[in-house]
Length: 393
Image (tube, rainbow, N blue to C red; front, side):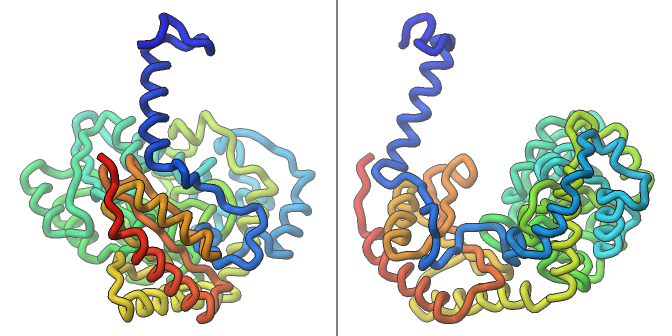
């Protein structure tokens, strides 16, 4: 045990806890720390969320620059009502695309999820969360006065059994899941929630801008947008920006704008970001081939892995993942892929189940078949080297 206080002035109990956490993490990461190169030219970049490659699009940058003088920085309470403001124009454009009544902006997708779940849940109410739902939905349930209950991933029948046992509540799922890339059967979840008087919340972070008419998302594509009370989203995926929002009924969005804690006690998206998001949404709608190519390249990658006998997440989106039986193996595989010129993302506990590691590959609008084949060959080579390894206990 450390002394009563550390050199940094931390209490001994915290200093000891941080030291043990770092030692565990370094066991996974050393000698393969996550370090993407500053210059990615020549790499196959499958590690980013900028699916449509809009973050540096000239039109997006120009829109952002034009709005720099509109310097309002305030909570979302003050960001609506002016039809000419960037915030209001963005909210209207999103509502039209998602076929909902209204939208409230948040500082992040995390804040949107947390603020919504906390605001709509009553004390003791069951909150049914898919076991792989985004951490922000789980955090919202934890911060609320409700009772979080985990249900099996992508299993509507299992959800219905739990509802029959525990009663009506809030159901929280992703449309397209962020680690595995698996997709939800939204009509099945909608039917269950309507039968049992439950409130459905769907996180569309990875599907908005990628699918559905006008990029409206998975609920639009599956024809159930008008039957889902709340959908949440992040701007940091298809639109390549920063921030988030909640889409839903006008009365509920008014309530969130005035009483949702992350919306009230954080500044809204800046005007220049709102302008950039609006322009990015316009581009996504004008050029649906961007999303179509990302999705097609992900499918070609799955096929390339199948030909090589490599198990993967079996996704239906632009995200493809490969699971490894230890965090250390995922870290080593990441580094070896990087050395071969392929950049992936790595997920380790507590983001995923203890004792495992995941390599995630996210496909984007600028991918081509040569890059897909190069990535698949690199994965085959690395897994052949990594999987036989015996790790120290």
